[in-house]
Image (cartoon, rainbow, N blue to C red):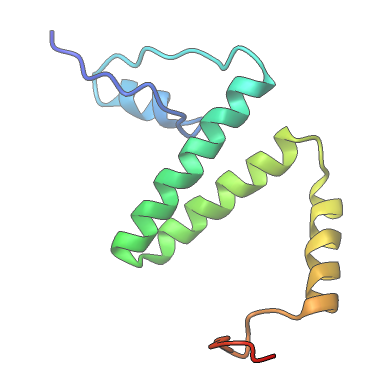
Length: 106
């Protein structure tokens, strides 16, 4: 039996999906919060790369899922995170206008 090594963070139901395809999933849980956050950061980069290559909206959903996991892993409630986002939007605006800063003249 051959094996492919991945050593990456996966969604919670992936082991079950693998087992249902008559394969064996060998998994472990992150040792601590620091390792978990490190794997989430790596996953965020992977998902961003996939989105930038494909432009697929599903990749944005994956990015958001990783961001939400990071927020919770850092001990911040989703409500507090949303308040932070809305506060920044109120102070600096969003990205709705498509404004490109070309230069700033003195």
